[in-house]
Length: 395
Image (cartoon, rainbow, N blue to C red; front, side, top):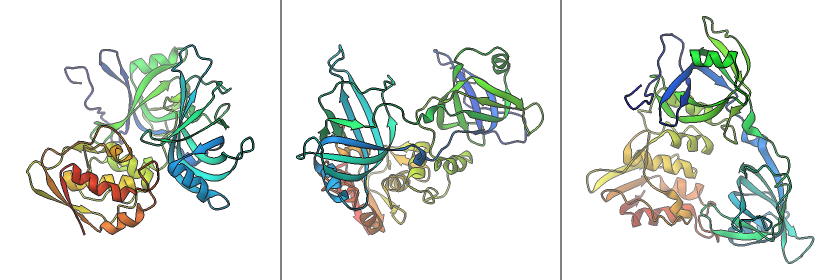
C-alpha cells in the first residue's frame, strides 16, 4: 500500500496463481484487501441469453433506421447496432423526467404498416437491453412520444409506445459469484460469521501475474450464501456471494480469454488482439494504455491492416501503429458519429501508412456513421484523421 492509502500490488506466498482480490475502499480512498483468490466463477455469460424481442409501435423512423426497416420487410434481419430510447413521463412533477434505455446488438426483424396508423410502421426488433431506468417500474409512464436516437445522440425518429420495454425482463446482474481458492482476511472472516443485511459493496479486482490491478475493477455485493473448504487445499475456502456483480450485465463470454491474455501482462508482440472477435477486441481496448501519438514531428507509423475486420479492430490497429503493442491512441472516435468534442489532435503531425487498407474498406462497407446511413465508417475515418493532422497513406 502506498502512502496515499491505495493498494498498488496484491501478493501472497503461495505457488497457486493469484488472479483476483476483494478490496474495500473508504470514502477517503483508503483501500483494504479483504481476500485474495485463485479464481472466480459466475462473471461471464453469453449475451445471447439476454436477447429480447420488442415492437416499436406507431413508429416514424428516419435515416438509416428507416432504411433498415425497408430492407427487413419480408427479408432477413438487418443488423443495426445501438439504439437509444428516451421515454417522457407526462405525470412526473419534474417536466424533465425521462426513462432512458439502451438497446445494443439490435437487429431489425420486420417493418410493417402500423395497426393503428398505416402511415406509420410497427418495427419488430431483437436486441440486448444494456441500460434501463433504476426505478424498476413495471408499467410504462404516460408518454405522448418516445424518441429514438443513434449512438451519437442524432435523431432517428420516434414512436408511440414499445411492447415489451417495461415489465419483467431477465435480471442478469444478480447472478451469484463464487470465489475459488480464497484466502480471507480477518475482516471477511468476521463478516462470514456475522453477516450484514444486504451485504457489503466491495470491489473485485482482476490482477495480472505480478499482483497489480488491471482495468477490470467491478463492484460486487459481498453477502455469503455458502462457504466451504476449497479443493485447492490448505486454509483456502470457496465463498459463494449471492448478490453478485452490481453491473446490470455480466461480462460477455468473449471477455474471458482476453482476461487470461492480460493476466500475463501487456503484450510484447503486435496483433495479439487479432485472434478475438469484435466483442473480445472491444474488451481488449479496455486494458490498453492510452498514448498521445508520436513525439517527433513527421514520424511515419506503419499500420498493419490485415485484421481490421470491424470497428474495434480498427481502433486496436491504429493504437498499435502510433504507440506500440498494448496501446491505444487517445482519440474520441465518437466524433465520427456526431460527438461535438471535435476530436483529439495529436501532439505533433505524423504520417500513418495503412497497409492492406482494402480489408477495412470491404469489411466496414455496411457500417454507417451518419444518421442518414449514407456515410460509411471507412470513408469517414480517413478524412477525420487528416483533419486531425495525420497524413494517411493507403496501401
